[in-house]
Length: 470
Image (cartoon, rainbow, N blue to C red):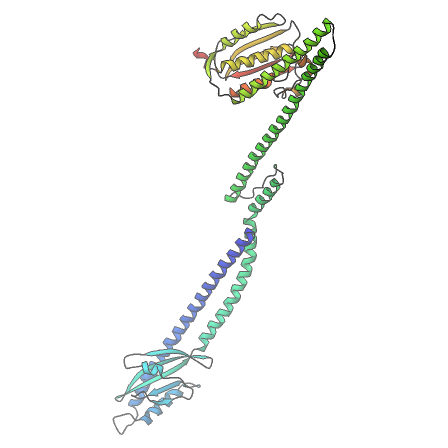
């Protein structure tokens, strides 16, 4: 069952119970008030009739000091018809509670009479032939006789008013319930609209539409729930996109790895088969062996780079404050004797936070890539300078450059801008991928500035101590 219907039903049930109890209480309160008024009037009228009887008894001539039964009947008859066209319902009884006079219409039991005594006024409400009466009882002292005067007052109108009140209230209650149902239906629909929108968004997302968002229509708790749901959906979409990107990258990596293995292995197998299957002259044997050696070295370099990337991802790095000069001294020793390219080193002193061996690996790879992109005799500049926020290492070449659309891809494993040029120099497209992983451990990244045909500058920034303290 829908939540809006549950809300509607529970509201109608509560409304029906509230209207029922309030109506019952109100009608009965009016009824009790009216009935008590009628009872008091009947008791007052009984008292007045008792006083009138006593007065009339004093004015009756009597041969004896005791009022006779015939005189009692006569006075009672006069009281029953006096001043009323319909007559009063009266019953008089003697000391033994034997009836001396009663109207023909006064037909009831003696229960009230038995309860009446000299010190009490009694009454009861009785029903007879569909009509309701207030029966009252009082004692009358007339000429040393103790008599019992009973009256009956018709209060059927009070009961009819109560029945009419219940009838009217039932109709009013039914009307209010119908009206309340219509109003609450709109209210329930309005209150549960955020839930319906969230349900719709959940279903859309369950079908794979992760960019769908629930519309926020209020600022209450449900509105906050919608906002939180959309934030959760954003995080979920980001995570799914990351997983899809990682899956695609992994598939691309496997495909590239298989391709990179296939090319050198094909060459190695082909030339090895040529050497073993036929007798070649010395020159061809040397060329074949050289191809096998070259491709083997490329496979070796690719294996080492892959191993470095895997180890770097799992490495627990121990950072230390290292002089920037130490990196440049190391690089001068390694590349200073290479006469194929011109290396120019220029750096400012600083203390940088780094894992020394990893940063050396980054610098060596950057310089190696710069050499592969440059022609013999070209200038390669290795610089280090202080700047706001850290210390920047940069390697600049004047080689072929990198197109703008390729710059975001060159840190992917096995990605090469010019595959033929890279393979001719034993490249496998893993150097910059390794650099990117190492710098990620240092909370840094590669920054690339390149113009095709003019060269490239690849740099990164490491955290450094306050330069003014050096």
